[in-house]
Length: 255
Ligand code: ATP
Ligand code: ATP
Ligand code: MG
Ligand code: MG
Ligand code: MG
Ligand code: MG
Image (cartoon, rainbow, N blue to C red):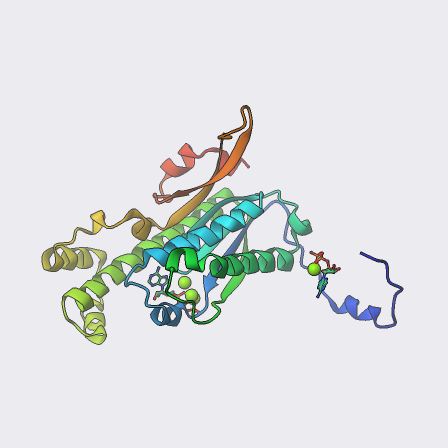
């Protein structure tokens, strides 16, 4: 950039505050769609899970992972995505606002940019927007508990929504009646309603709906150039609450 002479207005910069994130902590950025209950209605999302919308979320998140090398893992479900940065990242000198606003705007722009690939002729009716927050986790345990919390949330909501929409779409109940019917029920009651009234074994529902999507980076051989590696973003729909996942991907917590 060209060097400008300082103007007498320059002092207003001192009103800006510093926002460096604490060193040596896991940095998590979570984005979440604004009023997606309404957005999903306006765009005729299939209930309870529209696979087009989930794949579009995954596509937008992948473009964020491809752009930011220091994101190790991401987890998404419904209208939200969490991005986990290496503990020792020096990205933008760990400036909180830079990190959170760039992640959010790249995600949001990608969501719009790739809309047509998933929704085809179903037009985007208005610009969607997302909120974004940054959370610091000081230990591996708290980071794991964070991701477990989001995946448990996915499970609880999906079991509820799957039962709710079975009652409405197949059982002929109104939304209010279905809500009333599910009030105070346990997980086991919902599984039982699905099984005995709708011949649905919840365990056989698609993994992406039950577990959400984990995006991991894996090194593979370059398809055309010998002895060259390529980093690819791999989507997984598995449990991350149990130790298994962390043993299988043991590099994650070492980084
Ligand atoms: P940074 O990511 O640090 O903001 P930058 O390349 O965006 O880097 P800025 O200082 O924000 O740098 O400057 C924006 C640059 O974008 C300008 O220097 C100019 O080159 C270009 N630019 C922006 N708007 C226009 C425009 N309307 N017409 C031509 N060039 C433009
Ligand atoms: P807020 O602005 O507070 O986040 P919200 O309406 O976005 O409000 P959330 O708690 O974020 O509320 O829930 C997102 C809602 O978006 C879900 O309840 C569901 O109705 C809808 N939704 C998101 N993804 C899908 C999908 N793939 N298929 C169907 N519906 C979806
Ligand atoms: Mg600029
Ligand atoms: Mg919310
Ligand atoms: Mg939302
Ligand atoms: Mg949400």
